[in-house]
Image (cartoon, rainbow, N blue to C red; front, top):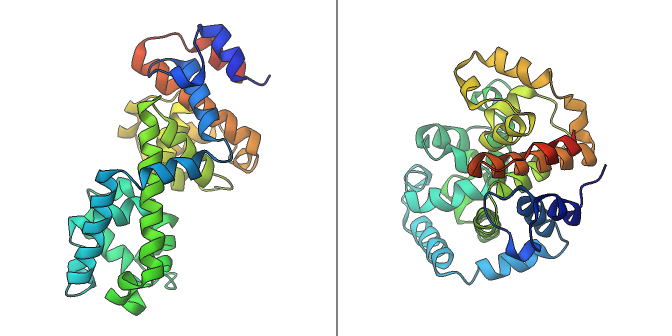
Length: 262
């Protein structure tokens, strides 16, 4: 059964999507649907480019790279990392600057090197920057800088959507990055994918203390990874996560709506 914004509104007594409030599962579904409209991202990022905080962050990013002595010093500068990591889908790695530096300067062609032991986001980032071959010039490349700044602006826009309803930015990231994932350990190693999948499946946060193999088994016993190739299955998981994120933060009853998505 397809859950439309109207049906969700009827079940929970919500108003239109523009009046979405955090803690309301119906409002969360409406906000997710609005964020997936064809022109939503273009309009949202256009507004974000005018935001003073975003403008300042981008200026500091460019200035820091311009003044960096080498690639190592650039990757140690918070002004660089504040833009670089979100732009590359590595915002959750901000607490590990040492690992980030080693991974981004590693050889992405080395099938037995450091990158082989990390999740594929690091390999993709290393290929994008090509710092192993280019060094600081890889960050100074105007085309690369523009790509990174565009990625940061989109990240800022998406995280801002959580002010409308919790979990929207995570759900959008999941829809963009989870398709075709076949390795459960890549899901567990990616903070956002892990949060969405475990939230959608109703797995407790406390399972993080369990062995990684136990966590993987908990996911694969409830989710066929082949389903991540199905856009409808991805959408259903994203919806379940948004409902769960809203319900857990408000005490509101999300069970009836979740049962419709089962």
